[in-house]
Image 1 (cartoon, rainbow, N blue to C red):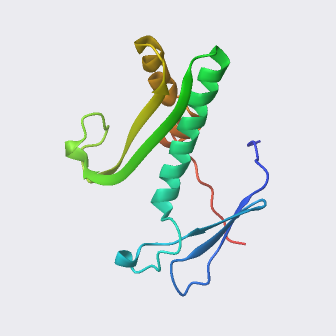
Image 2: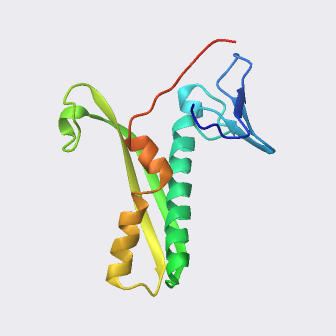
Length: 145
């Protein structure tokens, strides 16, 4: 049986536009599309939310690793971008047809870290759970209620 997380993420929209109300337990967010895509720009876009998940998980994972080792890491800044590129322009993609999603992630580490620590933290960034989910196989089960 699949492991379930509590609470569920609940999304509600009125179908008149793109704006969506997101509830995660006691936390509330808004998702929307920018004005240029026909939205009202009242919240982050769905792709921005994916990037936020990846960036926050990356920062949390790096910070935890450094704290456990007593390394002098003071701050972590993760900057991300999403784009779609032609598969033929992707060196490490299995497919060479159509378009693929590209996420670019830049990590800035502040603190008196030596080069070995910095390199190790870069490796650890690629092991954050959201990175593993996004770069692995995902099974999405959908049903109507």
